[in-house]
Length: 364
Image (cartoon, rainbow, N blue to C red; front, top):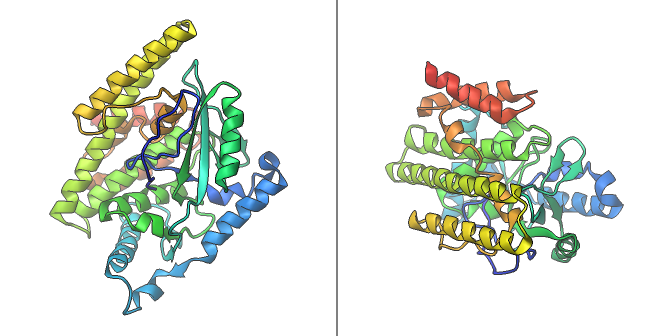
């Protein structure tokens, strides 16, 4: 899923409506319907209405493609969605069901607002517990006023808070996910990445392991797009280069933010006075922002300091180089996904299992 907008300045406990263009903000809308015990009857009804509103708008892609007056740009994206979906099923082996055989126009509106939070004195996300999916480091609201009220309450608990709109979602295969107009307006490589990413969620979901779920889906989304445009049915030299550049940039950003997170954890472990902690945290963020800017991955600013934003970014960027080692060639991607899915199911530590798989493959 692709986000919209840029960061707005604010304090360490403030929140922002920004979602960087490289970041996917998503919500598991299909399973929100099961979380009435945590959200109350009103929340449950709003969640049900929000998803039903989207699903009611679905139109079969085949039906739309038969229209002679269909916008040419939309026609290209719809044809691409069907081709990517077929490639995801074979040879990548993803669970596709009936997902991405329909299109839903949600233009001009945000699907849901996602609220996340973290403690200021440690790099630890605030989590909410949901049935079936376990603990997640975010909560969805279906009106901006509700999201802002929740954010205010979290700020009052001395938490760093972030709010951003989600523009795509996964129902983990419970329903046939449509291609949303908010995603279809992106460039072809980004559209392909989104579809591969979301279909991986329908293939594998580990309850309570959001960083692994999202980072694994980031790997599959980007490497799937590379395989599709470089050696698959969508082979195109320009798009192949773009897909490779995007994957390299995402991995680089993940490495820089991963080092930032490690340094922040070292800082927090010393329990410095608040003023000193904020000074040092600001310095670390400035250094990371400069490192990103030197690589063309940012404008040099990662301020204001906000642990919720950093953890929200790392949700999608953890151990990407390790994932990448699972598939040295495009032809290795399908078998690598199958091995990964089989190996991490039931694993107490999926990232440790991932590391073992990558090391084993390198020894061969």
